[in-house]
Image (cartoon, rainbow, N blue to C red):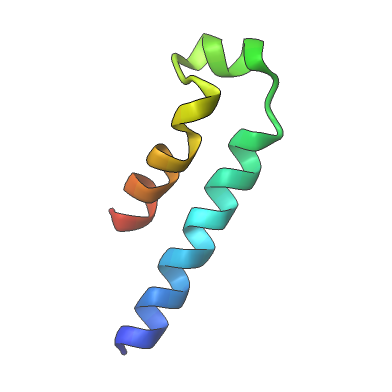
Amino acid sequence: MNVARSINAWRKYRQTVNELGRMTNRELNDLGIARDDIRRIARASAAA
């Protein structure tokens, strides 16, 4: 089960990185997110 959980977490991480990465700097700024924070936010999202 641990492998399946790891795969799902990785998928959630990649999805978050991809979705936030497609946003413009202005859109990210409106959300209070700096482009440098995308990976940190994706890691936190995948861990939840």
